[in-house]
Image (tube, rainbow, N blue to C red; front, top):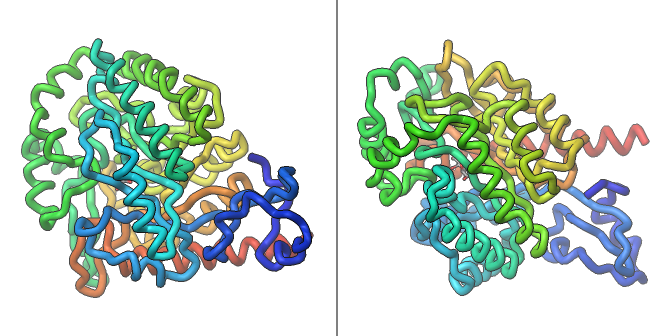
Length: 408
Ligand code: DNO
């Protein structure tokens, strides 16, 4: 959707007297407006929505009330992690989840980690059944007001680290860390066991037990799948699900490979501008979008993140963004940093500016934070550092808006 005019809440108030529809998101959530229609005509739009990942009641260390208290946060990039990859997400369960979140004064328009069954990625004959299930999940999510689904097409593993809580010498906080050399000494099974052991009892996104139980069997099957085959299987999946997305008004956002290179010799096809160019063309539809994760793509210094954002933003293909910083420590060695630009190697101002100028209606969330102030929680998903991240990213956004208005 193109930005026809930028309006803020004050401008909207001047519209009174008109019948304004399409501004549901404004009511009770004064920070942003997604789409403004007057008498069914789109007259303007758009402002970014800042969101927060939350795992569900009893499954997250952070109460919704705390998220509501973070300034200028419209709601969640939600997760319902009771479903194994390939299962249909039931309408009633999604409805209850959304209702519960709404009752806390928060929206949920983005859902993450609707995982794709390995049979689809492997191109097995059973894939059609799982694609049908995925379509049903898309319909159910749309019926509950979800606008964007974040997923990934990484074989076997989702994101991957060699340490979930590496102490940062400078200040005693800790963060997620990756060192390819350490990985060389490990089998996939050892990595899984380490990750699960160090997860503090929390399920980690992408490390669901049922997926890992089958590890060796699945790894064996991938021996027959190279990058070209994986891309072909991906196309088959998208051809199956994108028409449903278009029909119900959902945009997909594929999450990049994290880290941004193949691991354990398993093929990976979503970690560079060139690869994403191929992906968006697999099915040429606005519904076939990206979840631009700056930290995943940014784990490789070869990826120039602001340039990548501008490229896909101008094509209207960024459905959501995860914004996080990384600090390079050597070849294929990095740790996650606070969001502040100079704490890591990514330029957050340029990243937010690229989003502002090319995808002003994007859903953003601060991605993984460090663990600070002795907080205990799911690795990468504590409250404090992510809330600081939001405040900082919002500050950049406000400056961009004000500078923009001044120049007009
Ligand atoms: C990691 C998350 C990912 C992401 C999934 C989407 O912390 O960003 O798990 O949600 O890859 O499928």
